[in-house]
Structure formats: structure tokens, C-alpha cells
Amino acid sequence: MAQTTSAQYASPTDVATFGAYTINQDPADPRPLYRFTGRLTADGSSGYRAEPGRYHVYAGWFCPWAQRVTLQIALNGLENVIGVSYVDNSRDARGWAFRETYGPDPVNGFTLLRDAYEATEPGFDGHVSVPTLWDRQTHQVVSNDYTTLGIDLATQFTAWSNGADLYPEHLRAEIAELDAWVGPAVNRGAHRAAHDETARTALLDAFARLDHRLADTPYLVGGQLTEADLRLWVTLARYPGRADEQERRDHPNLWAYARRLYQLPAFQATTDFTTFADPTIPPGWNTRTAA
Image (tube, rainbow, N blue to C red; front, side):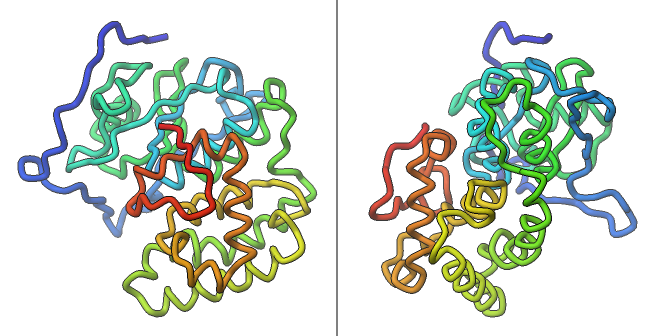
């Protein structure tokens, strides 16, 4: 198990020297944007057995996709089973990096997250993203597919978890059905809504549907906290309108739901509003943050 003996950091973000980060996707390349799609399984049938101390998640406080994963870890009580560390909040063409902001890479001593990808696929030319799951045993990236990674953490580590069941089998079809429209309209549409009227309309329509859904239930699916809530909440927390009085009046159940989830320790422990594009903390939210 590799461990750093002294702090190693990347040089400061420097777009003038290195250029801006871009994602180069060759239309002829059939591989997905999130290229590493290994799965964790309790019985090891996937080649990656779920076991304590083996895996490490490289995350980013700013990233909603990464927070889905860190929330799963926290809500399942897996903090001592799966390691987590954080990249710096800014990047240039080199991609995400380890700097003094959150400390060095505690596993490999990498200065750039790209180094993990290069160690896995020499000459790597794809997207360097968080979350990234690293396997200490095989010394390579297992997954940067945030959806399947979150599901695996919710279902394959029950031997070490606190018993939380955030992806119960009897609710999986309903979670998928909800994600089919919340994903495009909210998770992927909230950013576009600021400059795309069609996306803005779809987002507000989705908010209205969610507000109606939450009128008489505390959670989105099955009357219990599930993966569906995690997927929605990380976007709500980063949505600039969360602090707008008109938004709160238009969708009172939705924003009451968001505030209520933030009272749970795991949500507070994995959230740092200061790293969001809009760091405003909405009125009525508990203002303690993890950083």
C-alpha cells in the first residue's frame, strides 16, 4: 500500500501557461466520456471485491457527482472502510490537482489526478474527472462512473455498513423512472438554464412536479431516504435560485425538503458552500460546513 512520506503538491493553477482544461472527444471514439466503468461486488465476481481498506475515492468539494459518492460513504458509515481525499477547486489544462488547499494525495503522492489515469492507461487522452475510484491492490483506476459507483457503495459493502439501505431492491425501478426526467431537466439542465430558455422551462417544470410530489412525503421515493434524494439534493444545493425568495415561494415543498436534508449530519459533513459557483448560503439553512 503506497503512502506518501512528505507532502507533494502541484504548482498553482496557471491557465496563461498551460491553457484551459478541455475535454477532447473524438467522434469516432466509441468509448464513453467516463471511461472507467469497473464494478465493485461483494463476492468479487466483477474482479473488484468489496473489502475494507482497498479502495480510495478522489473527490472534489465543488462537484455534485462526487458528492453523490461521498454522501453514500457517509450515510452508510463507511468512512473507515473507503478512503476519501479532495483535489483543489481550480484547474488548468493539466486537470484536477493536489494542492495545499486540501492536502496531498494520501495514497500515491500524485500531484495531478491525471497521474492516476496515466498509471491505469498510459497515454490517457480522455476526461480526468471526480469522483475517481482507485484500487490500492491493483494500483489502477477502477471507475469514474459516478452513477454505478454510488450504487455499488450503497449495495456491496453491507458487511461493514451501518445498515442503511439507500438503494432498496423494491424501489430501484421507481428510482430509475424518476431519474429519467430529473436527470436531464435538473441534474444536467440546471447549469444550462441560466442561458438557455428551453432548459429553463424544463427545469421549472421539473421543480413544479417535484414540489407537488413532496407535498405529502418527506422523501422522493418510498417514504424513505434513497439514492434518488442524493441525486437531486446535490444539484439543489448548488442551484443559485436556492437563495432566492421568489423561488422559495414558488416551490415551498421542494426547498423545505432541501433544508430538511441538510440538517442530517452526512449532508453537512460532505458540503462546503464556499466551493460552489454561487457560495450563498440560503436563509434558514444550517450554516455549518465541512471545510
